[in-house]
Length: 82
Image (cartoon, rainbow, N blue to C red; front, side, top):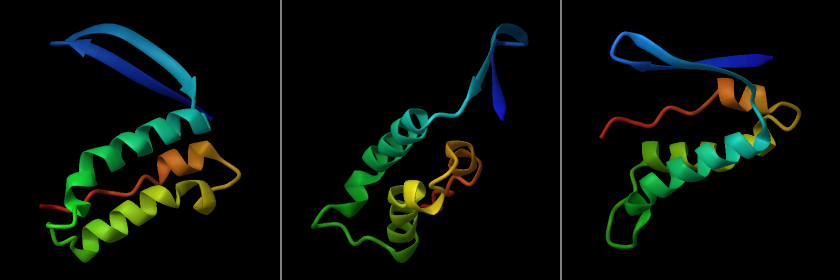
């Protein structure tokens, strides 16, 4: 299943990209989300259950959706509120 992403500048469309989600794209997005939340997992910071569950769900995407990177992308875990 192809996805479309549109880039805007104000109200003007700059580009439209059509793509099929690859595992490489899922892993890059996942790794970025993990890196952005790494500070929550430091030894001197208490990792709350919602954040632990979120990070676990990110790490488990390939196992939870082994047959489809598109499904993994469509079922992306939602980061908890602060």
